[in-house]
Image (tube, rainbow, N blue to C red):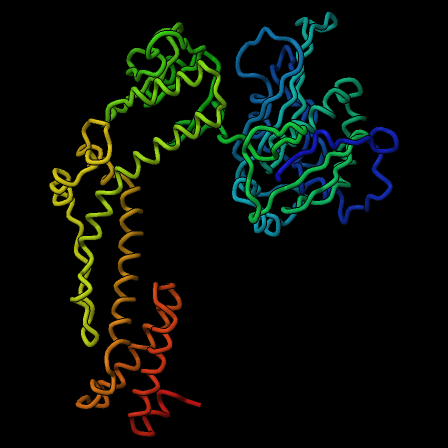
Length: 507
């Protein structure tokens, strides 16, 4: 299980920051540190400069001016909060330029074994923040405001949050000397190794961490009762307002500042979150609203979208979900209910497409051994849409709406192109397999009686090509069919003169 052991923390011997006795010296300065972190930053609030970078450690790690600006901007909460104390959060910024660490490590070994969701980022940095805001009469502004930031290319959200919860309180008390000692301890850690459980000593505590490999089943569920926490990142990484490419396509932005309600009105989808009212019938929060209604700062919670739905809402499903929330049913049960509904809806949508595609496949009786196989029929969108009248999704799905419009929208999307290419490829492989089976079921000796040497050689070459394609493309062909094809090749070659045999079967 991918986990950080909370219950398994144990005190390490020695003073704060002292490496364990069994730790080996690193091969190069900060080589092991850089396997986990790029650097550690301290961001403070300056009355004249605003948020300012106070410290970067190790000091020889080079950040560009844009990266420094982004880290400073994002290391404080993005809106005013009246809450005092400590706050933890994370962000992601785009890396400017190539690798600038003088102790860079090769990520290929780690990435080749790690799941895709846990591989190192090549073009972004993750920032894991521990922000403290407390009253302080010795400061002009009246408040002490400072952030400790771990900068890494690893998406280990909960691991680094747990690490910060250990080292940040010590740092705010002892400042730079403590930070230097912690970084020295991290420089003694073994490199992250997928599939292994590692012991990571820091500030007198040993963190036991298991990094999942590609062979492991990732567990994204809530922490188990034993106190073990998931190493996996949050399901969704949000881009920051500070990024210059904010308005590129396919961006999910999460903000708490009400300024953006009006600023981002042109965005096609805006989800405003608030306390749901679950009493009574179907609440207004689950009803779709047009973005034009999102104009005031006191706008009610809800989904504001420019998208025009093709199908009507499933009110029965919504009531079941809301009823489950009222009765405090387990989230897993509600998620299963929603997944089942979406699966059934998707199947109802795809069944007519699959049925139409199956009709484009040539009949098996039309496949003869000594002729080229017939072609797969073309996909005519209008023909398919006409077929929906008597074989559409309405036969299996109770939802009403503009199914034709939904299919037309699907045809214009890249999803249709991917689906169609995959299905046509599978059909072509099936057609090849049926043709090879037809050849192997025929009597080759009867066929060769009145054939010229050129025709026999041509058959040998084509059979060899089909064998290669059958093995390379993993065609749905039985092994006995492949054995018979090899026997036919030997039989055909044996019927040829010795000089041609030598050409076809060189020793």
